[in-house]
Image (cartoon, rainbow, N blue to C red; front, side, top):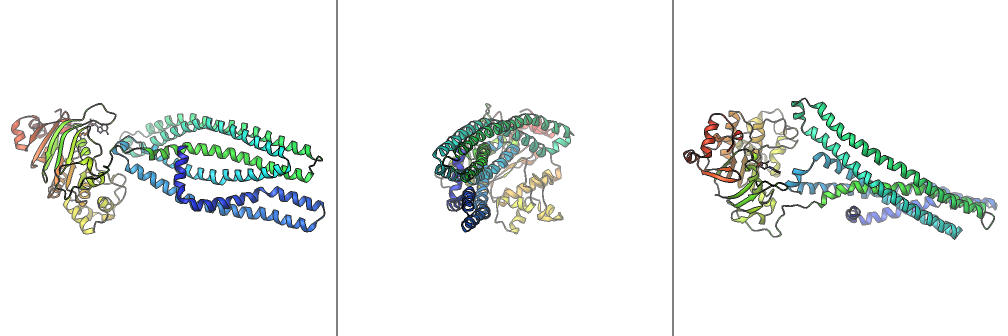
Length: 580
Ligand SMILES: Nc1ncnc2c1ncn2[C@@H]1O[C@H](COP(=O)(O)OP(=O)(O)OP(=O)(O)O)[C@@H](O)[C@H]1O
Ligand SMILES: [Mg+2]
């Protein structure tokens, strides 16, 4: 029911077009249904030898045959005038909602399943529109006309028709309800299949590393085992429905027809019998139509549930009702007593972090893998809100700043940069649509990637492949630096890749960072200490808290965790492998 309300909320925008479409549809259906009446009039006229009258009614009969089809085509055209923009609008709205949803939602989602639900949902918009406004509507028009003629022939038959209709409707309703559960289970199994397919496609590299093509096929096959069972249950439920409905509707119709036959000679003529049987036979098919459509609507409502359900997801990290004024951003960050744990996770990742990062300061975070360094940057961007404490930008609680505003001040070079399957230029200019070519080249120069782009045969128009697969790790990172710089952020976060880059590549990134660091606050999350020897301050994170803090030389002298790590790293070990 909720889905239907939402569906009509979307449809509300097209009230005018809908009215014209329904009017034309009812005219078409009325012309179609009324045919047995013209037939009876033709028989009456021929019986009385009235040639002129016969021709007139024959003409009307012919018109109702030909014109009805034209009008029906017109009504489909008018329906499409609503349906096509409607489907587009719903798809765009749902996509926008998915894009808007929190980081936490995206972490939990399964892209393959979601796309499957999305596609099914869009299909259901078409089917429901069609079923309700073309088919069900036609059944109603046809029922009204049939009843009118039946009642004018005999009230008894009219009432009987109503009883048959109501009883059948109740049976259809009951059967359809049973069928819904089967459809829901089938949908889940279908989404699970899509999930495995998408997972395999995304992870094709890992599949190749382990020559696991057959294993993936098996994984899919297992999902299909469940899918087959659910499919059969769903399909068989249809067969039961078909048999029950054809028996009930057929039985009812036969009773009415028998009543009409019995009346012949008792106030009824054979011509009346022809008309009545024409109406009854015509409506018998409408029963099937009704049944198929209700079944279709129910199935599609189930399909719509997941699709529209996406719109019900609430954003957890909300924008403030009233935004605080920041003025010109200086780039001072204050972490006050920050504590954090991920939703659905019991472990505290950060606990009691207090830190002030001055405007223009270059600060580095180090600590073993999983210490919470990347998590800290997620809090700065409000991907999540801290479980305790406050993050402030220039003295303002960042929960009082709109997420889009906050993120426009912060440029991020993520640990594993991911690119759109598009050109280098598209990716670089992603955060600054209006950027001039000169600005793009300047950012690329600063990030040390310009030379590389210039040497490519297709230059800026080079396609980078899915997720940026055609670029090397270092190139992707420098492209990500350029991308962040082009947006001219006041704060730059550089989450260094854990994978080792060759020293040439590292030097290029180092130089890019130095260039990028001018005039802005820079936070570097470092895995190789050689990259942070010159920063203003190094913060050592351990067990969710700040363990040490100072310049490189000071920390070495302190002979604490950092000094130990430095020594180990000098021996060639990566920080990630060390226990701090
Ligand atoms: N979305 C998430 N849901 C639940 N737990 C998470 C999530 N993301 C990260 N974690 C956990 O939070 C902890 C900190 O992760 P984080 O990515 O901040 O580590 P890190 O210090 O950046 O490590 P690395 O040096 O390996 O990049 C890890 O134990 C990780 O498993
Ligand atoms: Mg990390």
